[in-house]
Image (cartoon, rainbow, N blue to C red):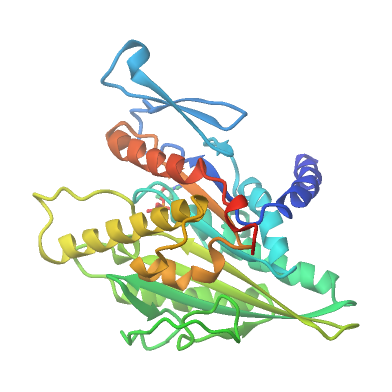
Length: 360
Ligand code: ADP
């Protein structure tokens, strides 16, 4: 019943989200301590119902020790995958109405980004992340609407590593570099040379995800886990033909698991590691810059400063809708990174993009 309550609230939220064009919502998710982490002292002091998150600095005392960050919503450690998805669902629905949507997972490595987007285990449906649930829903809703609209769904999976774009659906794991071009035929598909695979059911998607995950691992070096050093972008392109008018609508959903946001100690990072870190820092700040330029109605939006923002260009600003899940690891030794994560999130969340593009 609580799920039904969520769905009902969701229906209301959906109406609200239909007006959300150009705005960015930021949701914060705090992950629990992991089994074996028994020291238990958390840097999260308090989570308010209104989207406030109070962080406590273990090294300080009194008033100075606490700082409050405000978001559209904050999810505590007991929130389930189902509940997380319920809050993203209205945006997913609007893809079938012809909107472009971006959902990002942001946070330091180990804070739960992949958990939110993919889930810990493909084999258990209960823990599926936003990706699978979103695609399952797209199939489900398009079937519901099949009397009036005939939908086709296509999937692309790419990785951006050191400012190079790679196709994750190439089964030989080749390192073929891909160019980014605007593809007016396929709304939101800006990497036209990467495979774009038609899918009709969740099983198709699971099969593709397996290939993608395997290819991601192929590139991993012994030194570090590559998946945390690259951005992965799962793009879903939806094409609908309205049966009465024969008109075509196109929507696009980008599900983005961002590279770990942690700063690398300059004195320690050398060679490849330093290069990776610089690319990541640059592309994450490019993302922040694009969002704030849109908000400030700047005549120049710096999409071209990173591959990530080029790939997502059609789906940031304008009539697009954006949701960012910001992830917090509550462990004491993550405190510094937690603060910078939250500061980044605060920078993007204090921004209303709606007015920015209202003349479009
Ligand atoms: P990231 O993608 O940010 O590097 P992961 O998603 O891999 O982080 O999460 C790190 C670890 O924490 C994994 O073992 C994951 O299963 C666990 N974890 C993350 N979020 C949650 C959560 N909400 N509930 C339970 N375990 C979680």
